[in-house]
Amino acid sequence: MSLWKRRPLAGTMGFVLAVCLFAGACEPPPEEPPAPPPDAELVAPEEPPPDKVRPSEPMPAVRPPAEPEDEENAEQDAEGNGNPREGAASGGGNPARAQPAEEAALPPEPSPEAEAIERLAALSESFREVTRAASPSVVQVSVEARPRTRRRPEARISPEDLEELFRRFGPLLPRDPELRQFFRDREPPEEQPDFDQYNIPLPVGNASGWIYDDQGHIITSHHVVAPAETITVTFLDETDVEAEVVGSDPPTDVAVLKVAPEDLPPATMATRQVEQGDIVLAIGAPFRYAFSVSHGIVSATERQVGILGPHGYENFIQTDAAMNPGNSGGPLVNAQGEVVGMSTAIAGRAGQFAGLGFATPVDMIREVADELIREGVVSRGYLGAMISDDRQLVATFGVERGVLIEDLVGGGPGEEAGLLPGDVVVAIDDEQVLDTATLRRTIARTQPGTTVTLTLLRDGDWGRLEVTIGQQPVEDLAPDPVDEPPPPDPDDPDAEPLAKLGFQRLLTVTPELAEEHGLDPPRGVLVVDVRPFSAAAIAGLQRGNVVIQADGREIASVEQLREVVDAADLHEGVRMRVQIPGGPARFVLLSLER
Image (cartoon, rainbow, N blue to C red):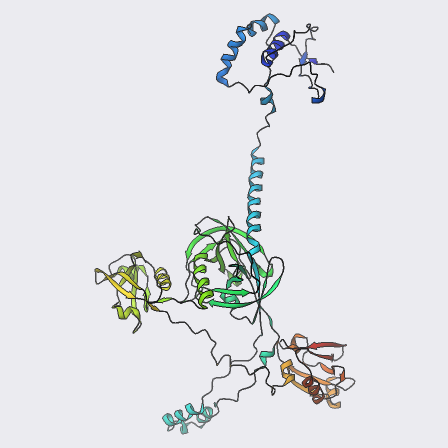
């Protein structure tokens, strides 16, 4: 291959000398080649492959590129062995400058676009790492319950109350016979059997949760499990396990479940409180899409939004990480994969996420969960005072901020200690309490029987008052017996088996009835009414269907159908053949849950 291109070149010997000086050794220069054409150009020779380098040719010594400040010294060294500038001049031009091998091998600097792509790839990998670390401790929580179709019983007057009414207002009642009869007609009705207990359990809730410890305890939301009859927990490997409620705390919306398997991978809980701007990920089952992940930042902390009611304790983390129905109870994790909170509520219309999600902080969850596991209920301190932190109102008592005592519960800890309406509390045990939320949380966390010191302003004078904290009354969360009367014994032999399955009214098909309803041939039992959510309703039976067979026996009357159903094990089920008027017949299996 020719080493020349057409470009003027001078100083060939100068070029050879420079290469020799750089290499530290040089063989005698070869004979000067013929002068190139005027437009010749010098190109570097192709380096032979490593396996073809001749041993007799010494490899040039590699030196690091000279720093700028060393260029003068290098030039002086060259002058000691012959001035290259003079040599170049004598050769008729400047020599080609040799580039150090290391400098020539440096890769080109990456473009801004390439650097941005690398940063995005690193961020994406970090999200994957957090998801892989946190997901094994996340669960999906499915809740089932038997729907209640019974209407709220109309309020009735007992015979004793009716007699008292006549005794007190008797002289007035005769003047209005219709009113008198109205009250007499309001005697309590006879209690009817509660057949809703035989309804088929249906999914009534879908939520999320996370493994709290290696003893099988799982954290989720109270509002998720409150209506539950059966709770199923699904793990990341799609294993389904039934769970039971260990304890539930409505004021914080925290519930603890227990599953049989132990040695589960518990979530790692953060020890540092989150701050505004922290990156967080919400993991859960929104709209039943299990183990979904969304991300955002902490928008704010210590939010009180009033969703837990006047008796609730709120200290929410606000985030723009997407939360939707089904995220409730799931973990909110930080960039290290540690749980910092539990998804609890969203702010949006019709239950849809609108950029505002709220999570209960993990330190509150830890306090509540440990006590639920240990005691089954949460014990809280009690002051017995009505309070306000309206700053404009508080300012009229002579202080900018504080908690105003508006009233006291008679015989409560506050009244017994000498607390008075109009006092403004600013500290408990020298810890500032400038709003009602902080005071309520501080008192609630105080063990009943503990004596605390309140710093307060009374009639313009500062003072300190010792108060022995009481036990907060536990709110009775049992349903009103008027709303849900206690159901009868499920194994009551007097309960009608047909009613258990959901048949509320049946008629034997007669020729007249068959002609009226267009039934041909005239046979079987006509379904007139079916209880919603019952086994019959879930199987698709409805008004106008005709039962023509039961467990292989032809059915000609209601009595025959009752005999078959009475003799059957309803948990195993009764197979029926049902005719749809004007359509085909089909088989159904009606059974009760065990």
